[in-house]
Image (cartoon, rainbow, N blue to C red; front, top):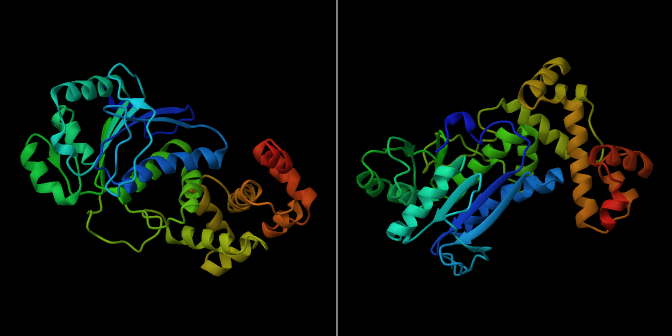
Length: 325
């Protein structure tokens, strides 16, 4: 396994190649929580920052707990060389670790930059000898059995755990939090917020929060005034508020608001508001047949021509051309 210096959880713009090894009995929610944030990040940016393959042990589509099969790209190949291997398992997965499979997982993981276990996928990492001397987690229902099975692993009740090149998560929602953390680490907080917004997801929890707890918080670990300001921007896409007006509504000075955004998102409030509006406009261009003038009005631009210029500058293509591509 590579050293911690090669962690995937750091600012990096090069594409990341990920192999998802999915087992029958996995939750469709876990599969979606692992893959969809990466898809959304690619879509938000219009570039392929995450490149993935979905495989199974035998190359057949594994049936999830809901009965829905997961389409795969082929059989798990022990000679493959992804940047990251993520094993997703569920009911019964803990007992599927044959000697050949353990050796294959170990071989791929040791050549990769990182390896992850989602829910019962963590059991297979343990059986492959990849958790010895490390911290890890699994689904809270399995915690006691998991601790007994792997006494040389520090088992934690956290939502997800990152220990050097090994990461583990306890279920669907923690996996979504984990993947948002990956997006934020590599591409910045602003992109992570955009990805979360795609799913109307605003209850992210810290990694070390205990799994059974329910959160009503937003943007955990960040100043709550940041969330207030962003919500105001979202609510006024068609008639954007000035920075001074937003600052007054949340009870701070315009200078304090600017400092807050620069520290947390590395963008000014004005720049972030514009990008928020342009991303909303991009979704309307791609997902609706609305005239460009209507899209301009809905996203706070004074005319279709002003909108087109701002859109072209942001996305390097005109909105009409993007719709026709």
